[in-house]
Length: 463
Image (tube, rainbow, N blue to C red):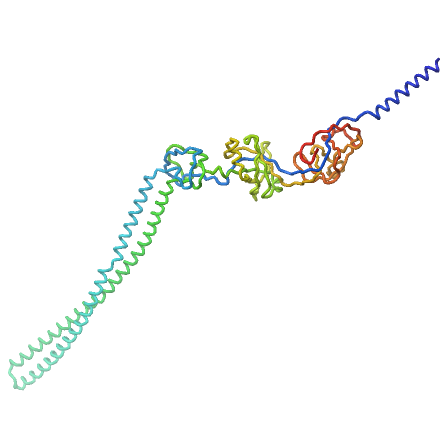
């Protein structure tokens, strides 16, 4: 009986051990989420917050210090190019123009006077006639001197002859005295003729200087006219500036569009440069995104873009990259971290604004949006969710994932291709139909048994 019980106990132990062994062998592994990969299209993209902007916003400001009249035009009002949208009080400016015009007119009148040389030309002609006359008078004066000189010499000779005859008693005293008288008269006539000749020479000299004085006066008038020409140029410049200021007092829209913002309403005195209005064309709406410089290096002009966000409702607009700024800038994030960013400008595709209007969406400037810029695509790729990847323990930063083979998780090194925040292309290490673990547990090791819970694939290239 005792041996029988022993054998029963041994038999039970064997059954229990065998059953436990069978349970251990046949026990299913822990459940893990898994997807089965298949070829499909995958796109790499960069996502970032963005805002609506315009390629050109005209910011109208005070052209110079002055008083602005009340601005009545409302934001949202359509305007045409060249339309007056604000007006400065121009009374003082008009007065400046009038004063400048009077100054130019006065200088022109002075120049007209200086340009009239008729009197001087007449005087020159008359002086030339007088000079010719004086030349003739000088000749006559010289002839008179010569005649009186001859008469004086003859009278002197006659006196000497009469004196000799008187001493000889051949002539009477009366005749001698008459000869002396005639000699004295001849001497006086000669002196008078010489004096007259000197007077004529002096007058001739004066007449000779007359044309020189007139010419010097004409030269002086020419210099005065040149100086007035300079004054007129300066006065005309002041007049042009006054007219320009008066014209700029009418502040016009440089582009067609709508009034985006009105900063000044009531009349007041303002300094130059004070912003008054901004004008832009909503039909030129574009998207501006400030990307991290690391991401911006992947972007090129022409890349396709998807634009979305609460402001667009259920619509997802399309566009393409129009410009990537060549210079970055530093921007502090909401967490206080300095980041290098690059501005990217995105142009909406044709018809997208019409879609917005048809959907009843009124989109303005500086509205928040989100963009997804597609940088690359592979049409026949094996892709896995990014959550399936983990760093391989090789010390070199290689990537790996867990494949499920015969109910066991097998750590498999893989080579990555393009990717996005959701998926990554696997270039090497997988084949079509492989079952891949998503978000593997931290304690999972290669070779462990697992029970795959298939999930519907999310994204392209996963099923």
